[in-house]
Image (cartoon, rainbow, N blue to C red; front, top):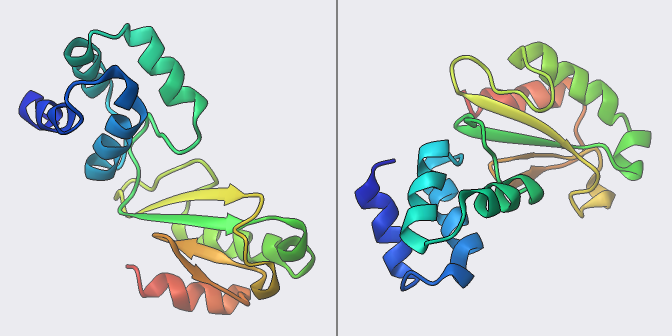
Length: 150
């Protein structure tokens, strides 16, 4: 991201340091992650210490300080999904994408994360891709769903 883009986002919130979290969310929404240079530019624009911004960016799970793939995959490992075979679904997704939870593939196509609950337990096991839930997953069905995002 360049300085002009950062300045535009900061200006949207009138340069208010109290809008820091929303500013970071907007940057991540445009960029899919928070580059260090962007954090430095925000610190300068808001006159907020960089260490404070880094603390916030590392505290909240919604933020990523590493590049993310075009498609974010979240696999629910909560109790309802776990007892219905979420581990097998995760193994299948790992095998197909070649990545483990917390990683992004080299093509920047997929990022994989596990979560404790997606809030749709009756549909378990559940995979969420780019915010869209896919329920009643089985290994073969997970592969079919992933092919729609390739």
